[in-house]
Image (cartoon, rainbow, N blue to C red; front, side, top):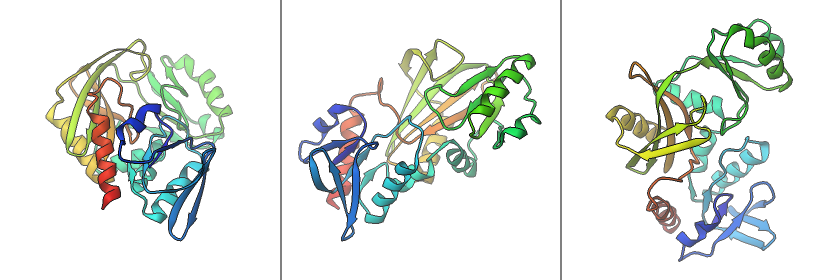
Length: 270
C-alpha cells in the first residue's frame, strides 16, 4: 500500500497492509509486466494499492504521468486515477461540473496577455490566475480603478486567468462525500476569500439541494471521495466554487479516515 503525500499517520489506518509513504515530487515509478512499482529511499517495491493525497498543489506533467501509470496497470486507487484526471485543474473541473448542470458562476476566461487589454470586468469581480489553490493567485477587483494594476500583474504570470462576479455570501458550505455518506460544514473566513484563513467551522445539516448536487458529482466522476464548496448569497442562491477530489478532512468526523481505508482495502482484495 502506497500513500502519496498526505498526513503522516495515514499508515495507522491500514494495520493489515505493508505501507510505504512517498512524495510525488521525488518518487520514481515503473510499469513492468503490467504491474506498478515504486522506487524511493526505502528501495523498489510492487504497488498493490494507492491512497492519493496530492492536494492543493499546482498540477505538473509528472502528476499526470503517474496517474496514467496507475490507470494503465489497473492499480486500485482512492480516488480512482481516472476521476483525479478529470478534475486535474480548474478548467477541467469546471467542464465536468458544467456537463451535469451544477450552479457555476459565469466566468470570462482569457489565455494570452494581449487579450487582457480587451477585457473590462464589471466590479466587484474576482481575478484568478492559473490553477493555484488555498486562496493564492486570487485578487479582488473592488473598483474599476483596481483593474489596470491587477491586469498588468496577471499578464506577467503567462497563464490563463479567469474573472467572475464577486459573491457577497452569507454562508460558505463544504459538502464532503465518501461513498453514499455526505457531511456538511459551514465555515467562516477572516477575509473575502471564503476558503482562506478559516476562523470558525461547524458541522451542519445540508440543504437537500446541495446533497443532490454532491451525489450527482460523485456519480459523474466515479469518485470514492469528493469535496464541493458552495457559497450562498443573500437571496438564498447557491453557487459552486470548486470541487476537490483530494479534500482536507480536518474538522470532519474522525471515522471518515478509516472508512476511506476500508474502501481502498476492499478494492485491493477484489
